[in-house]
Length: 384
Image 1 (cartoon, rainbow, N blue to C red):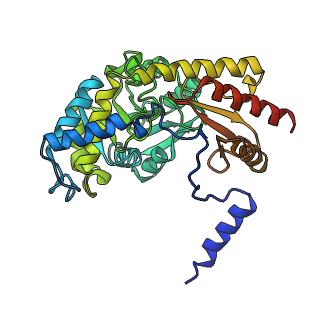
Image 2 (spheres, helix red, strand yellow):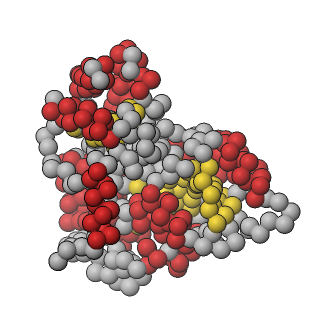
C-alpha cells in the first residue's frame, strides 16, 4: 500500500535537497562518528562485571515486566539512582528510558501555563519537542548570547507580567557544535532574575570533571542549577538517562511526567549496566586519555592551519563547517573511502549554510589516526 501523496512529496523534496536520511551500514573504518567517548560500549570488563553483578544478586529476569509505577520498579533502580545522586552531588536522581524521554518528560510536565521558557536556539530536538508539548510560553535566545537572554528576561519581568516562573534552558556541551556556554554567567543571570536554570549534560558526562561528572560539577555549580539531565548513551556507553534535582522535583516527575509514567521500565540488565559504568568512571584511565586526545586534536588543527574551519571546542565533538549538502557529503565520502568514519551533518539537521563534518574523539583514538584524518581533510578542502 502506497503512502499518502503528501508524504511522498515530502520525501521527494528531501531527495531533491540531497538531504535524504538513510540507515547506515556498519563499517570497519576508524571511528570518528560514534558518541562512545570512553569506549565503554565495547568495554568487555564492564560487560562481564554487569553479568556478574546480576548473577551475584540472583537477578535472572529479562525485562522490567511493566511500568515503574506498576511492576517494573525492581530493586536495582533504587540502588542505581542513589549511586547516581551521590556521584553527582544531587539530592535525588530519577532514571528515564532515554535522554529523549527525559527531556520530553521534563519540559512537557514541569513548566506550567503561566511560566515562560527561554532556551538556547541550538538546544537539542528532544528539548524543543518537550517545550512544544508544554503549556508554558517559550522563546529562544541567540546561541550563547547572554545579552540577548537578559534583554528577553527584562522584557518579561514587567510590573504587570503574567509569568510566574522563568526557566533558562541550555546544554553544557552542544551536540552539533561541541562548544560550552559560560555557565557562571548563566547562573548569575538565573540568580539575578530568580529564574530556574536547567542544563542538559548529555555530551559532558564522561568528558568533563575529574571523574567525568560533567561541566556543572567541574565548576562547582551543582547547587545553583534547578535540574540537570544526564544521558547514558554517550560517555557511559549504555542506555537511559537521569534527571537530577531535589527530592520534591523527583516526586513531581513520578506523578506528572508522562514519558516516565506510561512506559515499560528498563530491564534489570540495562540498569545494572548503568550502575557498573558509573562505578568505572571512578577509576577510569580512559577519561585522562580522552582529555589528552582532545588537546592533541586541537593542536593539530592549529599546526595544519585549518583551525578556522572548526567551531571552537574543548569537548569530544569537533565540527568543521563546510557549507552545502553536496559539498560536505562529497568530502565525507572521500574521507570514508580513506578508512575514516566521519559523518556529514546536513541541513535541515543544522541550519542551511552551517552544514559540517562532525568529528567525535575517543579515548581509544590514536595520535596517528587524528593526524592522518586532519591531514586528509586539509588536502580535500584545499582542492575544493
